[in-house]
Image (cartoon, rainbow, N blue to C red):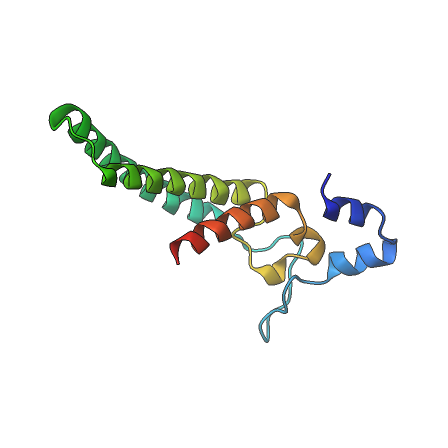
Length: 136
């Protein structure tokens, strides 16, 4: 059990009610938070990233085939591109996990602080952040 879970288990009911009714960020002017049935773009994200990953894998596997079976010569850049593809697959898994188990794809003003503390959202967000940090 995480530290957040144990802290919330021991929290008074008033605090839990406050955290359950307060959005993770302030909504834009004129927008009201919707915690019950918020708009979610997660399915579109999964579709787009699945198509892009499939394209990447086709080109990567073509490169592997050419390097291993036709030229029979592997160089250092093959290792770096393999690492990049593995990282891309890991990023895809983290994003898909966040969409399926967490709340990725939903605006933060439609997620309460209590919902934002869900480990499934935090784990996916952490992995997405670390992948983006590597790219900078």
